[in-house]
Image (cartoon, rainbow, N blue to C red):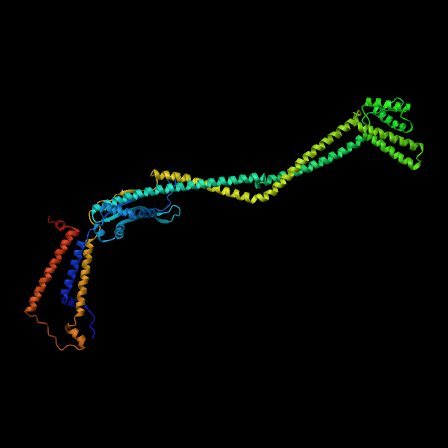
Length: 581
């Protein structure tokens, strides 16, 4: 049958019965915790506090090239500082972890050193000026090192702090310099790209010869203007040609020389007219008279005199016209008369004489002599006709120039359609490159100012506000806590050991235990009667307990004296409280 549920009375009885294992276990565990607390090697911690100061010049005036957050930069610097070579240099310089280096690998030593270095940021809650939302900002950070001795901890912390500060300055200057160099190279690249586009545009403009898309409106205007000029000059040419035809008709009705009228009313022929009349008469006479006839000779002499006077000799053209007329008259006579008719014979003689004269004139190379006109009306019309001819020639020459302009503008507009895609792409690319170049140039100027800001230490910087101090007491271990925890553990272990011994003991304890096992109550209960041996054991046990209690009290007093306050200080404080001093 199972035992009944434990009560406080049962627990008290068990504690009395198992007080020896409980006291022994508790004492042993407590002594172990005390020994551990005192034998645990002390660890000293030296800490430096570094303030992150904002740049002196407002960011609205000079913007820094460092865009990362402070905690990111701190972590980056930490990784740059805590490299293998740097940590090994520290270990060799300060002789760290000598015992560990004899038994552990280099990687384990470096890992231990890295674990002993602590970097903690200090954040505060602020309101973001841009979003007006609450956020956290890093205003400072602490750098600490946990070492085996106070002096070593302070020295290593000092070196680490100096390294952090120097690395921050180098990082900011390097970042500003790299940013400036990158922007300068980008500015040079864009400038060269703009020059390339400019050269390509110049080449396209030279090949286009005025057929650029940006000149399309001007070319259209000039083409329309030239076409209007062409229409106007065509109308003007037609007008002048009509006037020329009119003047030629008027000139044909006038004679170059003014006719002379005699008193009798008869028209007196001038020298040229009389010369033409004598030539006609001579042609008629040669057809009926022989060349030696006096009338023929007389007429020849008059003709020669008039030719000398007038300066006009018959030309081959005039003789050819007269010859053609005589031949036509001969043909008409042959249709009417026979070959031996006197008129036919006369006509044949006239034709023969004209042919001889034509041969003589052709051989002599005679040309028609211009007769200077005397009729004012003839001269006026002739001058107007000359003006019309010269004007028409000038207008036709101008028309050729205008026609060339029309063709040139038309060809430009035709070439524009082929040049436009390439030209517009080049213009667009050049404008984009110019825009980027201006933007990069502006950023380069800002980067130059920011670089000077970092060089002159006017930007955001780390300021050491609390240098590493020589630690007065170890950071670890916390001996009072270890002792208190050891005491709690010892009490728990003692109670556990008593319960364990009780569970392993199968003996019957008391009438209730017997009743629970047998299922029936006992008839009578005989109490335990102690003899002399039991009394002696009981006395020795009390003595041992008293000695253990005294030892515990002494141990607690020593622990308090070492870990908390000296006993003499506590004594004097107590006496002062009681008013006995």
